[in-house]
Image 1 (tube, one colour):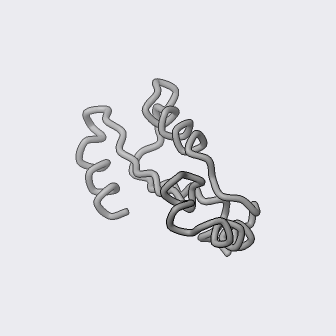
Image 2: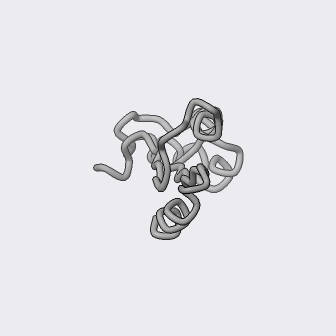
Image 3: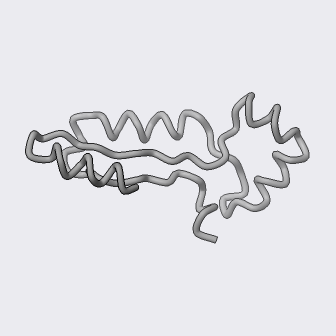
Length: 87
């Protein structure tokens, strides 16, 4: 977070936006191979939304952040984890 904020402050005057995205548990082949099916179910049960995220959910956020629609969000670490880090 500190590096993101510092870089965002440094380049803001040039109109450059800097953000980081921190995904939680995402339903991918790698996650499935590490956790296994039982581990996937157990992890989903611990997430407030009761499921793992989808890769396309992360991609949509990143695409929006780098789009012309984002003109003012900078210096942020955006956690996208279904509320997992807040419980």
